[in-house]
Image (cartoon, rainbow, N blue to C red; front, side):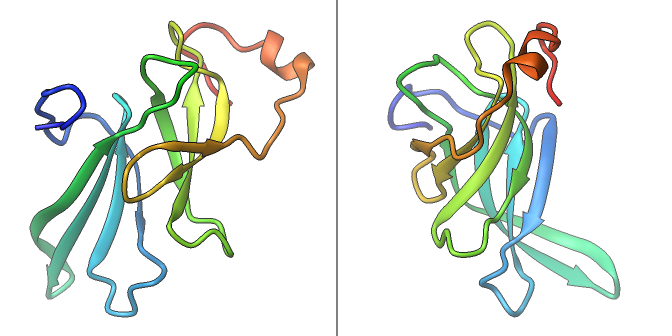
Length: 129
């Protein structure tokens, strides 16, 4: 269960996944779900097929200016060890953003990319870019 909310989370609506670039063996994967849960898992690939997934850690993405994050995309940025970039949709108070989160906790760090107003105005509710 999430220490902050007591909620339990399952792999639901996985929006994006990336192999951890610091893992030469290719066994660690980070996933983000549509409901804003950042998963870190170990995978075992046998003969080119996914044989098992073992969750190592999960955290709900959190930030002071939103009650949740409608996460859609995930990337590792070179030079940002321990952090991930997550693209989110505007949906309720979920921000239209590309933000950096601490991978080990899901806590918001910064929004390094400014979204031009002309683009932000054209994005509908539950829409991203």
